[in-house]
Length: 538
Image (tube, rainbow, N blue to C red; front, side, top):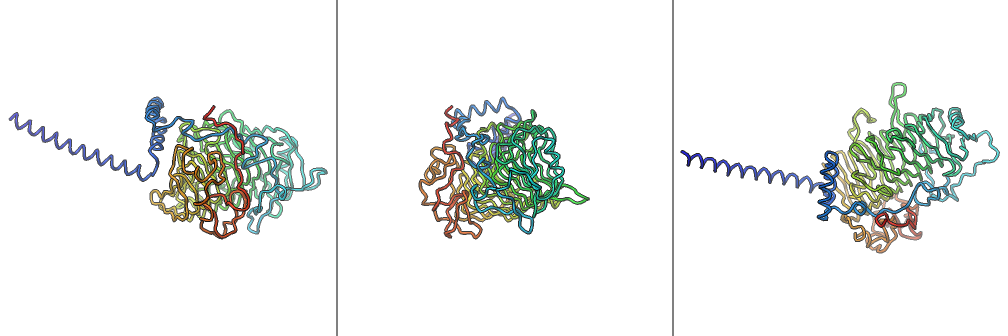
């Protein structure tokens, strides 16, 4: 009897062990398949796991991180997050990409549809505005106080220019704009030169724009709220604010400097379409201590926006899911253009357990009730990303396509990012002429058509990655050529590909791959030429 019982126990244990091992192998295969389909380096997978663990158990996370660092899977943090340089876009004498004191624009023109027309070049000598600042006149209103600014905005007429006198202005409540301009006669609110006027904002938003055809030039706007939750936007553009233009602005220390969304007016939902954000700098000087969305350019539902020639940097989110984006358009938006932007996920603010992505159509998705069509079958339609440089986003992708149809992604340079994701069956994209580290990945049913891309494997070792075979000092934004053989004249031609990141023409019918065209004019330097010491050496 006892022998029979023992035999049954042995058989049971044998089969239980076999079944357990089969189940364990199946689980491991499923986990392995999941991680394989993500196509991420092992060090990045470990890093993301540590970030998620930190949300639940910080003490255990620190122990695990120290163990992986000892094994060499994770590098020391100052190296892990890239070579950072002591450069400051808030400096009054900044001469890098984005807003600059030596940049000026003529009066904004619009086409017949009300869309802002773009200048051909960025040369201040050809774009300088020659308006009379001496004698005043019927079209020029001067203000030198916050109360005067409120009064001038409340009484503004089409074609008027409101010139703010040099100085610091404390903005303690929202400035609401309801007086409409016209496409033929926009209203222009401006400082004569960037840096002369500094608006210090201790309110949820500086400007709440509800009226069409306003132009904002040369303003510096800083959020100074003690609680980061309290400083949300420099500009909140809603409803009827069609044709809003923001040029040569320096906007910093907000959660979402530019917020664009619809608003109910007379029973209908109205969206501020056809806006332009140009030649501006958007960045934060610290991690934003908030669980609110952190995205310097946050467009929901509005269509036809142009985002060009801007610097977007250091947009870390410190609480909640800790995921942030440089810029996105979503919520049923369409026809958005991102071009000639410099995105640096980590410029002066190193990562500390957060995840930063570059440009996106679709972002993290939108609740159907907030979408333009109230369905959100597609987050975005007919978006274009071209001639952008996206750098130092080592914990996620430089370009993220989430339920976005008919997307074009071409002639971008992505350095020290995980590449491009095209995600979900609704997403379709044509991807060509790009230079990138990482990979181009169709996730969860997304579909991309690819041609003439130059792709290098993601590497933590920035001094030895393949980008250094092609460019002089890519980690500092110096993309001048060392070896142009795989780049020059190797791209696919496209009719509307007329200029490069620097504004140099692409006219020979054989474009170079990446954001820059190497030909007659030397490539520009989007970051200052002498940035100083690396933080990793301090």
